[in-house]
Amino acid sequence: MYHQDDVIMNIADKQKSAHYPFVTLILVLAAMTFAGVNDVLGADEPRVELPGDDTDLSLMVGEDIDDAELSAPAFDARKVIVDHVLDTYDWHLFDIGDHHFSIPLPVILLYQGQFHVFSSGRLTTGDGIYRGFRIATEGPRKGRVVRVGDDGITPDLQASTIYDFSITKNVASIFIASVMICLLFVSIGRRYHKGGVYTTPKGLPAFFEPLIVFVRDQIAILAIGPEYRRFMPYLLSVFFFIFFNNLLGLVPVFPGGANVTGNISVTFVLAMFTFFTTHWFANREYWKHMFNMPGVPVFLKLPVPILPVIEVVGALIKPFVLMIRLFANITAGHMVILSLTSLIFVLGSMSLVLGYAISPLSIIFLIFLNFLKILVAFLQAYIFTLFSAFFFGMAVPKASH
Amino acid sequence: MELLMPGLGLIFWMTVAFGCVLYILRKYAWKPILEVLNERENLLANSFKDAKRVEYEMSQLAAVKTEKLAEAEKAREEIIARANKDAEGIVEEAREKAREEARILSENAEEMAKKYKREAMQEIRDQLSALSIDLAEKILKEEFSDKQRNAVYVSKLLDEVALN
Image (cartoon, rainbow over the protein chains, first blue to last red):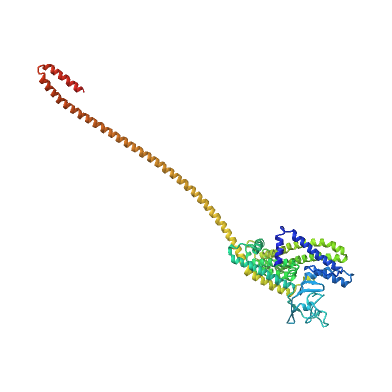
């Protein structure tokens, strides 16, 4: 919550105190990246580890160079970027030297009707095989837990399905964000409950009340109309859930840094919630429009139900688009930031001078992008909520239509 | 491709977590907050309406007040005018009465004076006659001889007295 408030305060106070944090940020990022560049060249001096997205990048660079003996592409930016936006079984914090420091998370597997619960540390340390399970390093299930075959190493492709209910990094991040959101808004709600009509918003309520009113007036009332009231809890919840997780994703250190809203499963669930809410509250007219559109020629409906099929497909595409939009925007943002960071190491692995030369430029762009991502964090939450509201508005059409 | 592969566990936990968030926030956060916001807006709207109504009523009252004031002013002027008129009437009446009384008084006085004068004349006449008789007696006694001259004289005297 502390980090979030900081980020929020950054927006609020941007005008007031823009220079000081800006300069500090540049210096910190510069220190971090230069430390990384030195590492690329195999300097063995003790490295000051700063928490951040790019600290472990530097380590990877070092490893890659060691492995490839400075011949092959030294820095696999693609691998780094994709690994960073994907979900993991443990929560990586930072590295010191060759030591990975990460929080092990519970792995919960349902395999052949039996639950296997153990720490993710079993899969990430040692030979990485525990009770016949391991994390696949390649193949279609790369990065997921698979059954080890008879040889004890390669994945068993014929094994029955593993139902994976592990508390991964993203799941843990969702839990943390959920608890934070609940604590925050329940405390605000209690203040309103106590204060009654004459509650004067001070402190946190003063910050969140305009957002709540914004969701109500600029989203719900605008898109749904007079029947907006019953959709308000969902719209507010989804707005703040996405907004908080977006902002948490921007914080590079624990408990942020997980790419929650840039994960297709998360956006899929959110889109499904919108889909089911739409159809739960849909009235007669909506269903009639879907299966028996009034005012169109009969041959469009019978014997081949062209129009109903189009309508059903449309109803399914709507949540699908919601899912893709949020996922793609947030993931793309993370990727751009990671790419700009990687650029320093890609060039740095070619030549030290190039690495140094590009880093200030890269850092300036990164700062710009981080501010942009704060805007995007709000914007994507707004768009998801607005489009959900539009779909609700279609499900409960106004009387005059 | 891994990016686009939804994971069963994540979907399950996300559904559970978001479901809980939705339930908790709906019950303990959005309900009180939205209620208060709604009530506050109603209160504000009503307050504005009330203020407007009171303002209107005040203006109405002000109009009534000025009207009443004007009426009172008119009434006052009327009363004063009437009072003035009445007062004038009273004064006039009193004057008239006084004049009348004065007239009556003066008439009485005149009459009295006339009466007294008459009485006085009568008395004088009476005394004169007595006196003349007296005188005549004396004259007769003294100048009994010169009868003629005495008579003329007496008559002359009488005339003089009568003229007075």
